[in-house]
Figure (tube, rainbow, N blue to C red):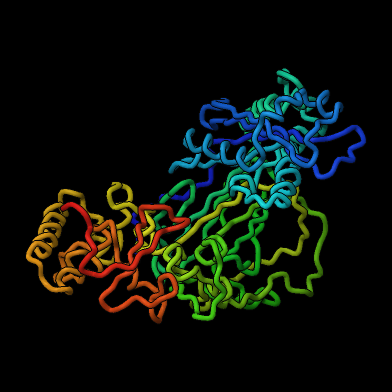
Length: 539
């Protein structure tokens, strides 16, 4: 079990805005189908500095209507030779992702959200084209802030982008309907709205239900992970920094399952908090307490007959997501009918698995379960709310420390990660969190002992132990195998039954070896005699 003596909230307060504008194929009759993106532009806004720090522009080659209509050329200023020389959408998205990565948008402590003027660019244009081209959209382009909605709520005025930029007291710069110029002008307007405190932000903490300690988190490639263990009951605490004076609707899903109710956070207070206690079981009729089952982390062990999927993202276990809509009241529900929906938590989210011998070690080690029964007095709101804009959702993943170390997400060589391990109540993990100097003598001793055994040419069992195929800890101070070897034993975590590699069972004197330092998408598995496995030079 992990704990923390300090409350360090996993805030979603934006540090950067990624302001997008797309241009697409069109004709005067607006009859061109399908519409294809021909320019992708993005401006990065540093929220603390309130300044545009960089911009990206790439033209995109259309394939269904490769010849641009004269109306499109006149409207956007994009020339035929520019799209002829460009790459198609998939490579451009890859190029843009690399550009964001180079500018640190996925690093720890960076919270960036997409911003557009209207939802057309991301909700319609990109979504539709990615669907029919069978391109997977990056997570950061699946949610966004609609600046037009926020502008309307702040200035009580509507119009096109240029009209609104000038209404905010800014001078229009560049060519209208140039993707890059539109993105830069949208970014300048976003800075103006931020300076007038017009944008809200949402944050959340995952707390141990009984101790109220905040569970530790870390960020890897822009994804935030909760480090926890099976058996821990938890609750989700939400904090809204509301700058719009409008109500916000918060929805929570765990492992892809809606928890049965939402929270309305009103605009009468700048800062407001709400707590999701558990899965709804029974809504109270009048003022009595409603019943919930506490959220609980449980071990994820897919059944033998579970469906096999090709990618870890197809397994919903190990995920917590908060969505936040800015809403307006549009009516009332029948008070005789319940609002919440009782939830039955089963194994649906976890009953999928990755192929044996190929990527199964990337599957989550935990799933959500229903824990103890909780009774809570809840005031149910029967107002009907309609969304007018949305904040970027908070997407968290959770897993055990062992799994995160195995996938090189939790790295004991980093001081901040060692602090997470030291907070563990598992003595083995806590020892891994010691400072390098404190563990160096044991590490050197383990390395010398391993190579001494190999030089003496002992039997198969000794050679296997020397190679780290399945090293048993002979004393309480031995360093865990994942901390001392580049080749680690995965068979101890394999599904029940014989381990199969390339269709045949691995023998008792053999081991299946996979290099985790290589590509996680297509790891290379080999079967070797245990005596033949060598971990390389002495540590």
